[in-house]
Image (cartoon, rainbow, N blue to C red; front, top):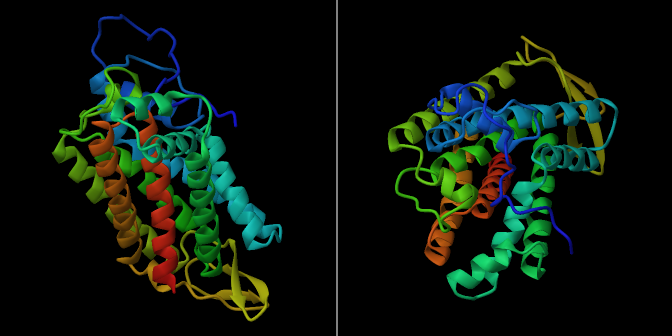
Length: 320
């Protein structure tokens, strides 16, 4: 089955603007993050390991942007009376489109490499191939099923868009952790070699603290109705009904059935779900480093999808 090019071979950026010998800036790192992790058009600047470290540190912000666009698609779909399951499919598909499908491709490649049972060198060769094997297909199907069904449950609890934004941010926060100092690259070249070990521990902790605080604040804002009304879905018996949250007073306008916010929107709920996503990504990263000798672009893509799915799943468990 044909697959997109491996993320281990990042797109070649145009010539940097300005003198070629100038050091990279924070703006260069932000542009690198947006250009590498999304389809959003940006003008590239100087690309070096300093810029790569900044890019991996601000990766959660790119995740928020991607999640916000997908959440908008989800909200519009629900307002148009699309039922929750196909609306969830549309939202997850939007995330895949906004990332060029590269993270999903990395997940499939890593599954094929680890599932082959071969040596590290041979596994890395398998991961570089353009086709997808049975392990990759199974990993893709199961991961996407988890993401879609978990988002569906979040919609039923009345917090689908918020949960999606948080999950996308958690997936990119996994990149910050995977590129921290001390994590080696499995190859001497490629995306993994450019970003591995570029984020200092202090930066990792600060970015994580800010992300967790932001998710807790988002839970409060949503619970108070400050985000404004949007269509969501509730489930009772055999039918679905649509509700709208009125900003400021928390009143629910019921068009058939009622929905609860669910305990995962307590201030500690969403940060806990993010922590679960990071733990899942940490376990996969640890396995990949032991098996392959370090991280690659494929490993990083797999971590994004794993952390996103685990965060969505944790929200579902907490809501029930």
